[in-house]
Length: 471
Image (cartoon, rainbow, N blue to C red; front, side, top):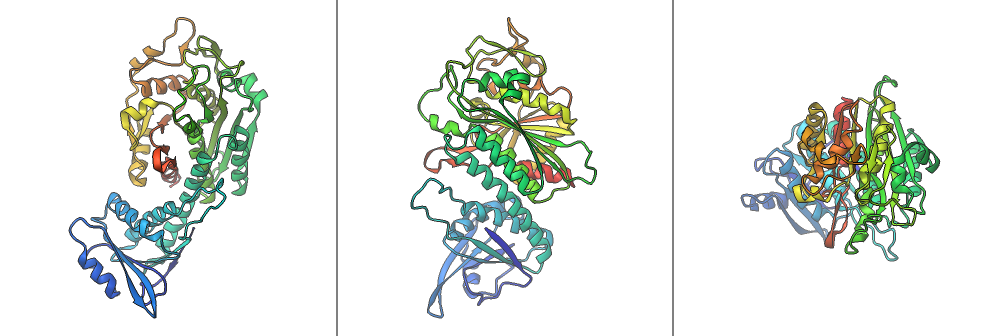
């Protein structure tokens, strides 16, 4: 979708659909229909639309009135406006009563809402229909500030849509090789570097990762992407690590058959990391950034790991596998050890790791756990700024007690109590030499039911975090 600006107020006789975003009721539009719509809004109502006759044609006119200047209010108004905008081809939007900073924020939020409303995943449909909405023009006296915000919105949408596309692609197509090839192509498109490690490297150096991958006919890969956007190319990078299980059967600890098709989404951590990386490179963020994605399938082949097996991770830690369906942490732990060589300023891993996180937080907030409170504060601030919600859970030392094994240094599960926390406690054994945070997105990465599909989260959160770091 294309976004553009015109350095002028929206004229009442502008051709096409018109939307006036009004900061308050005193900022009345020049258009008479829009003025009447604004007056008609009852307390608590945020949007109204009508059609008028003009030159023998019907003309769509709408107004949006956020309840206040807060991001939540803007997002709610934008969501209602986006439902209307889907039926328009190229609406023109007027920003009434906003100063430059407010206009930029409103434009970004409405652009994101419109872009996500226009998203379609039609790859496998014979008679697919594209969205009618294909562009938006913002009319404002603050064109420079608004255009800068729109450029950032376009980069965000690029990353969000890439994440959605990868998550929604069927698992017989989106294999580990497909994920690796896509990641390389996206990196090179924007001038970043890519390095792909194959199964021989994984088998030789990453025993925990290999223990998951060896049960599948699909080869595993370790994806490395590098963007050096900072003025000092040798400055310590931020490292994003994403879980890339392109299909999770549970392995020998086989999952129930119901809704197992949704296990194609078990690579949404990887998809969000690749999407955020591509968007950061597209936006040319002045930051050094590395993305690491361990990707494989978890299948119940004769060569698959068995409950009771003991494997050795990259850093020499031995792990007793008690449940092969707790595989995400087994591939992530070696990726986190691999990250240490880059001497990172911070590492954030993203994973659809535990069903327990859905029980704890539902589908509203991603779970956040960390070994460094300052890093957690940064991520939570980015969460508030982006509207991509996260909630911090504790990571007390006592939770490590649940991971003690009679036969190895660690066991890969800690029982039912505090399942999200003990999964993060497992990962924390491999992150002791750098600031690290873990985002459990099991409840936020995709929707089930009628609206089944990848959400693109937490790409907005990751990008805001990177943007803040780059400033």
